[in-house]
Length: 554
Image (cartoon, rainbow, N blue to C red):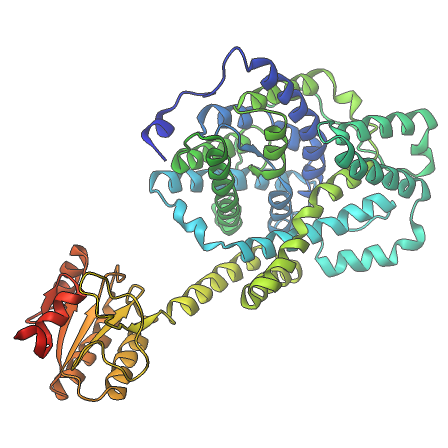
């Protein structure tokens, strides 16, 4: 991040020379976003207009505030599933209370984004590591996929139910599947998958919707049991505000936190990667502010939670877009559709919508990512798999809680086993001491130089002191121990207590303690903790050896 990224003008990067490319990309974004947002609104248990409203006012505000020139913000599959799973237990999907809660949830998420921007809390998203995100989003994606399969087969299930209930409903409903619905869905899937390989720039989702709708209307397939979207309310979004009891607002906070964290983890990473790819700066805190403003606007204009869309961002990048103008073009196009074209949406067949959403979320299942994790790190694979299963079978909110717990366990596991080495002198006066010595060998006659390659805190303080004691016991004739502090960036109170015990052990054995290469802030911290008294601090390890060995003293 630079000062320029924090204060850059809206639509940075737009010139008259690139305007045509950006407008064309905006038309492409409109063609991609409309069918997907209709599908995501249905996943969330909301009317189609909720997905379309989220493409207007929230998108405009986001595009004018965000620092990233390419990151697209919109409701996505994960956000839709979180909305459905979190609100489904508080109200009936499709009811007025349910829709109001979705608005309130977006507002809560928006306020959390703004707070994160103001207090610079974007680092919290780093706790959602790659395995955790793969597992969490994969669990949501599989839950969504079952609902979409039901649409594609013409089978009625409770889309707001638990995963096991959905699967049971799908299986028991197979005898009543609609053959025409299956045919429409199968043809849609073939076109979408083949089109992706043959011509990625073509908005195949829009092509599928148009062709499928024409076929359904022309052949009168609604009379044969093919479900359609139904009437869509016409008109632009209007300003509103969710009015709920405080108890309900409080009940929505956990899901608002989950929505915020997932978008932070994915959105900031994608924004940074595209900025690095194309050589422009981004400001994470400004991007968080943009997500906050967009979500509050969505809650105040009839939409629902807005997240980052990796797939649409990639599509815009492939279309040559390098600004946020396509988002504004898509917003204007969506507004025109809401005012003049909602009648065109009424006869869109549900199997086609199910196929579009199903194909869109297939990559989110993370199959390739799980295979890679299995090859690279089995523990990371287990972390992802546990998060996947909890999200799928217990729920999205427990899934995000388990994700954080697993992240902390993984962090503590790694931090509790730092590299602790007795350094070896190589006989070259000008070189640094970097290599570890064989077990039982001193760094120099009577001297052990021990390097700790991590901060000292509650998870590894005792591990470090035990390692020093073990090295001292395995190496006879030691009179001096020097702790190399170059890699120690912090010390907490628990580790300080363990260190005090180590000082007592060394004193009992008549071994002097010294330190080398500390950072200035660590010296100050050690004095505050009472760890640094009469001990000598050396600027380098070689200076310590020269001062403490018999040959160095001569």
